[in-house]
Image 1 (cartoon, rainbow, N blue to C red):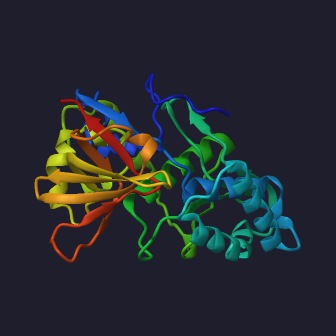
Image 2: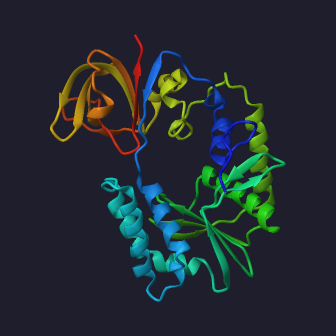
Image 3: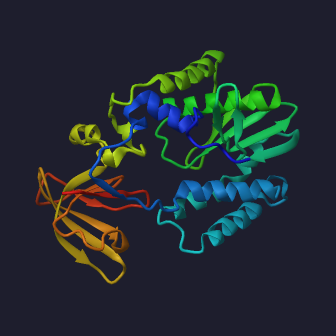
Length: 324
């Protein structure tokens, strides 16, 4: 089932969350920016694709659950038609190692397992795509997470997302999931307790998002990280220097260093002095000497000669060239 676009009043959990946290994320963007953004395949999307292959092949019922997961992982990687992302190796090993625990999470009485199917609530005009819905004597909702989870307390975003999914599952199957879990490739099974008030609060956030004033910006590290307007949002760039885990840099390109492996280093003159942004795919920056750029979701590299770090391009990085 295809998901409706984020227009016509329809909202996904991701967009509703972002707009509720920062109304400006729904705005039109700042003029004078040419965004160069080539979203790369990443460890999360690859893990979800492997999970999809595994479930559809009933790999959770195999005598050798790890073997069936290995086959699914190989299928997902082969489907790429290119090398796997640089951050995939550890995630793939974790997914393989934890396959038996994931199969156990489905329970003993399984009638059907539904992976990655979009569910819509036409009355509320919301939709979402739960990772796994297990149908049987009880309904189980499982959400795969590949990102770092530092402790047993799940983030408000994850609880919000699962609250929306639980509501959508009830709309589709007539009853709420009896059991809800996050399955972390890093930590394994993580049970989630949701109350009726959690679900009602999540649904209320959708209405708040629809009423939000797009001129009001509320930049914050977690709110901005994956916002689709981030490169264009001046409020984000004013706030970013004070963030403890800043992952963005802006400046004028003073020199480029191109290598034979298809990557380029950009020397930038920033408000805090010269820094290097390395590892940028050359195809994204054919001619940027003298241009002002913004880069997001880049990682800091400490320097011995300065308090300011250099920066490194990653699989989720994006870049924009500012018009003169």
